[in-house]
Length: 462
Ligand code: ARG
Image (tube, rainbow, N blue to C red):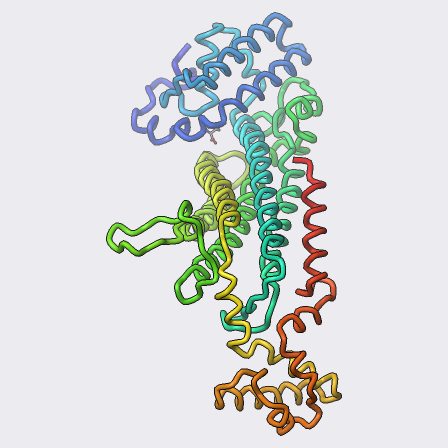
């Protein structure tokens, strides 16, 4: 038998450069444990279909298990000349058990092997990512509880807008990442469909039981169409889209960490263990992890685009272009899993500089909306109330006064309806407690959010 599995049809040696150019084993070797797992179950399916004898099946499975051990101990040598992980393992099995090894490939194609291995690999990675997200959700809840009651200026356009509980602001991230968690759960339903038995694309030529095979490998069911099974890369595109969403939201969060830890804001302090210094400026303490996460968000988004371009206008079924699908997925997954882990440390380690935050509560005109709402309750239509309040703010600004420093006479000169109780409305706590509606920043409302969040986490089976 020739060196190459397809050698029978060929009369010339493969070009050395083509071997290097076309190899994928340098990156698909991470699929080796899944290739073994799938091969063991495939051997059993072939035995049940009457293709392998009891004895042949046992020899093949024992050989595969030996290889599995070598791989896990790092002793297996992957060779470029055997192109990819599938042929490396097939070859090694032949060297171990002889000709019977080649019976394993009966009715089987690398086109289905590669997507079966990839799906099995992703099932593990997605479960790891979900655990990471759970840790992040937990860290977020803990921080929201640690600083419960702290009022900060909320922003729109990065301008001071209205007072808000810090915990409320932070819990926004909880709900962002809870959605990502659910997206992964939903994605898993489609991921857990098994291509094996599809062969090159037309379906296996031997009567293997695909339902049993799918179950044995931990899938929910076999994919219903063999051409679709080997052609689709929707399961990679969908994952990369979710990874992109995760990374984009992390980048927004990290941007806040960077801005809030700047001298100008000085809202938060990061622990020394999560910062690095400058090689020239001795005073520097830089929020590098947050900046790196922000930077790494380009990888998921960029690689999603790479994959979209890879499948654009690609005819069915398998085309070798598809070999290029793996590096972008592996890279984006690694970066996302690590970024989530890093974010957990950041959230846990961050400290609020509460004195600095509180300073801003009365400095801007954060409570202007409260004055307008107050006037509404006195019967003035909101648009008019908004206008009057605008005039009050302009007057206060000109006279370098805070709203609560204006005298009642000054207030009355703008609207006679204003009475002494306006000063109660100019306390930030009052503004917070007027928002106890579902999902608002009221003290009890945020407490409820935190409690529901905890129930969600406790109910997770991970
Ligand atoms: N290494 C290939 C890949 O990653 C496996 C499938 C090869 N199939 C083929 N017909 N050449 O896509």
